[in-house]
Amino acid sequence: MNSLLSLTMGYLIGSVNPSAFISSIRGTDIRKTGTGNLGATNAMLNFGKAAGLLVMLFDMGKAYLAFRLAQALFPTGGLSGLIAGSAAVAGHIFPFYLGFRGGKGLASLGGLILAFDTDTFLLLLGLGVALMIITNISISLQLTSALFFPVCACLLTGDLRVLLISAVPCALVLIKHRSNIAAAIRREDVRVRDFAREHMSSHSRNRDKL
Image (cartoon, rainbow, N blue to C red; front, side, top):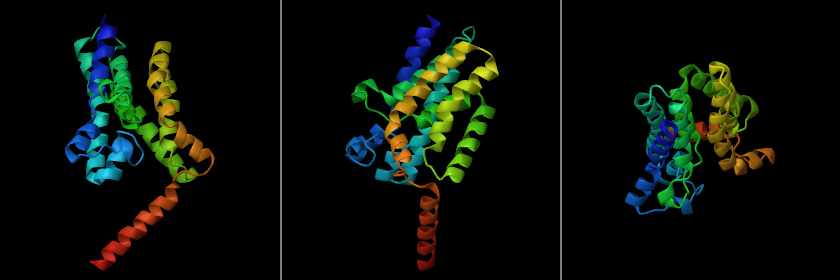
């Protein structure tokens, strides 16, 4: 019963989508523009960096909240937090009231990892960023988080059930990023160093105009 309640609660919390609310206020359905997703990246593309940052923090926070809340409500259920956090990622990707069309889940997966173990979060974040810089592939952070979190979680707990449960949201994130992965394989994705160089150059030009 605790598992079912954790699952339901996590999904409902995860389905709360700030991008959809901002889109409604602005009168723009961002599922028809930009990347076509209700996530932080598309919010930034359509409404600016501040909106993108707000959405990212919110999406991380709801998975973190689901994890911690389930732990507090069901302290005897050792997997309740992980189940709720994983369900929050699924809720973000497949919100029932938005036709099951949400975001790609990376920020929410980050919130789940952070709630599970801070050191694991920092390790995967650092590794992902390092690989982005070294390989020049923008999808590196998503791949690192989704591929290595279940393994790290299992090694940390010694519980095979943790591996199986955490693999579900990670698989969903990989599936939602399949077009990005295909683009990276074709070398048609955004090149990290090129993007950074262009952004820094643009910032420098704007500063010189002041």
